[in-house]
Image (cartoon, rainbow, N blue to C red; front, side, top):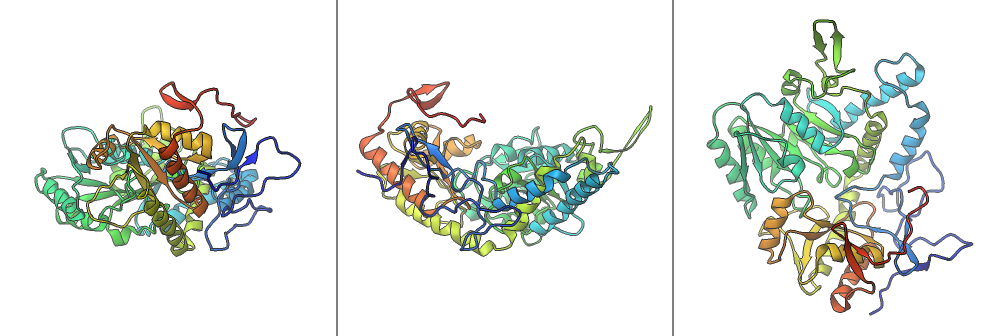
Length: 466
């Protein structure tokens, strides 16, 4: 079987490689926002070529957006524009410090608009969703009951510890999921209560019934925190419409991989809690005998903040918000193409939370009978230039349970996740590659190295800056 993909010898020189069909080429100028003809924001590295074990190069098919999304061209351009002005924030008298402070604080308003927050909601900048939920966990009033599905990503599952945490199995229908939360809250002690739920599963891409769960939480006087790490890059979010109290997002999922995230929501618990970190910036006054802490979001932002990362996060949010319809349409077309193709691969079983079809973002996890997921991922990378994720996706309980439901074995799967950097050619390539591997195996020998599959005698060289 011959794959219809363009491979160019790695030893070719003299002229630049042509871009892969369907790939947006890198912008020729900087300082402006670059949009593909269909209105989809373009990503840095869209024309990236990677080496194969055969000595050829090929355009990189990045199908791992759920782990870390590539940087938007608009973000890269704006960050480059800002970098000469980068300086300390809040306490600098210099003009560059004033510029940095203005952008840093203005980004709080950008994040409020991005999630349609209430006027009184606060925005605390963090490193990522994990950091945000650990901050929220540290800020809960004493004896708060926390209700969370045990199939959550570890970022939303593990920060809550102690006897007042109620982990409930995720049922097989949306209605049953709502009922499970209702029952858990009804059986919990009186006092502050918090429901934690993901917007979109990082394992299956399926959307949870957030608004319906929020209505149940309100009935019991509970608050609700939304893990939007996988939802925010793909769909418009409204704190008001969903009626949630807190939203956590990660920049590296939102095409702003500069190490910033945010916790957005009600200020009272955060204002009353001890500072998440003790240090400069979190204080109003320090004397020999006492410390007076800030009341605002700075209370939990001690130390010099990631000003560049925060600005990048804001630019990404503004860019995505300009045409959500185009973003969703692009992804859903690719998702339909991918899922239909996977149905034709012998032994392929897709993982699902719910028995009935539900709305979902562009993430699909699956197993292929008789094939180790880690081995498959290594072959896809080394021989076809495709980046996918294998393993349990930092959601071990979910992966193990859903693999068993799908009739698979083990605790690991393959995940293909789509985004703005994905094209029809990428989807077709991974489908063709999987069919070929299932039919005739790999063209190279592989062995485990430090627990991971890798090509034996891998001839590929890392780029010079590594």
